[in-house]
Image (cartoon, rainbow, N blue to C red; front, side, top):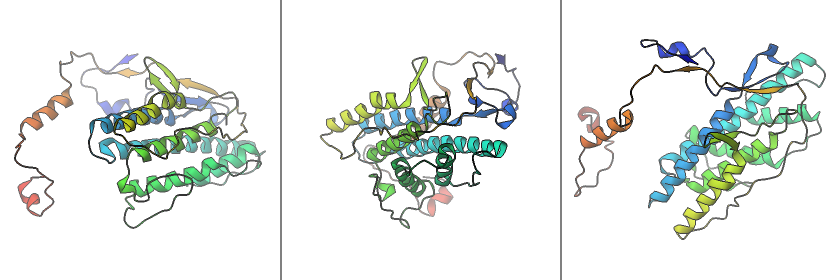
Length: 306
């Protein structure tokens, strides 16, 4: 474990191995380790969903809450990362072996999934429900992420995402989780002798994201909804669909257990960012007689008020 020295520049530590980094080593990529970023993003997505459900329980208002939209985006990022990782694998394998047919180069997520399925199955994979639902997830996410609201009114046949994405709530988050985890499960056996299903850190250990979703996220959503005397048509269940083919590249998974740490220090009793946020709140006392809304008038530019 390398301890940083006082005065070191933080940016100097972006080229070294980090604690918890995960990746795959095989005969591909000249033996280099291919990062598996979807492991980290899936962990973040899981706990963002936890925060979104906490906010749902504590808020009287129906809507996405401050965590809903970021959580949907993080689940999509996790899926995109897994598919991009698999696509890099099949692309490098096709270029190095020349034995299973060429992989078309593309930057589009759904085309990557199509190329992965075709290459690993040797052209035998049939169109999947996973890809149909992933297409709709991509449409919903892009409407939010690229702010295509108002100008785009998509229709959904295989999911129940909100047509007006800006009106989303926790049902859309649960739908995003179902599509994301179904995609993970579809590809979990795509590499011989490796389980690609993301594992979530919990209580100093790791467990599969689908199991924890069924154990924590689904029942939490159902219980919170029932406590508000409401219901949903969304079925909280995962598909058993899988690619059904695997690529044997003699690979192994690696996770770093060591890396740089900050210099030793004596932490204060209160988290720094929470202290600064509390100070900012103190400088803005509440007037119980006034309900304030954001100031989007031109006057706000000159006064600095919001």
